[in-house]
Length: 253
Image 1 (tube, rainbow, N blue to C red):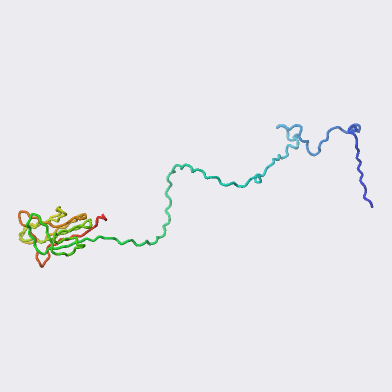
Image 2 (cartoon, rainbow, N blue to C red):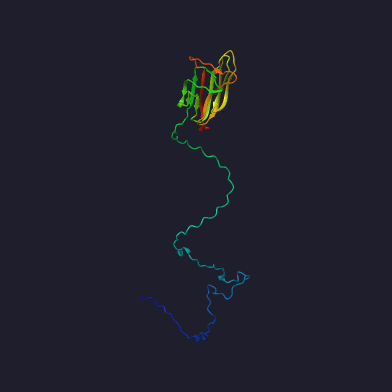
């Protein structure tokens, strides 16, 4: 069975024939949305009911994605000059005490200490009588003489290591004789050993500490005044001794 055919009649009339047909001459108006653009925008005091429907429509703003226009990262520029140093700020408060560190390793052993040793001790067995106003007392017995610094014949010790020395002198007086001796430093008397004449002989001693320079000499001098000065001695016993030793070198003072 054949489908029914739809026929459309199209009338083509000249423009001047529309009025004769009794049709309205008003322009065509869209029935769904208000005309665009509007004849006049509503004022600020126009009621919402009288405003055109297009007033409530959202405003559309175009946006551009900048990321698609961004180029590649350029090379780093040259480093600028350093700025001026700022003013020093106030001192901060003291921080908390830290934890105790671990014990360090033992160091290498140091070099051995170099101690200087100087000492002498000499004696005289024979007695001695003064024959001049001043005379040096020689010695005939060497007990200790490190490095040979004491000369028995002249009775002088010559200092090689400067420093502080301890010196001591012991003698035995002679009956009814005066004993008058000096411990000398170069040409200067530093201490006196003296005993008055007595019917009994006595042991007398004198000691002192002296700073000695290099090449200084220490010796014993017998002094003769108005009467004879003498000290007693015997070949079998040692009554007269003169000793000295270095206490502390000048390098350690």
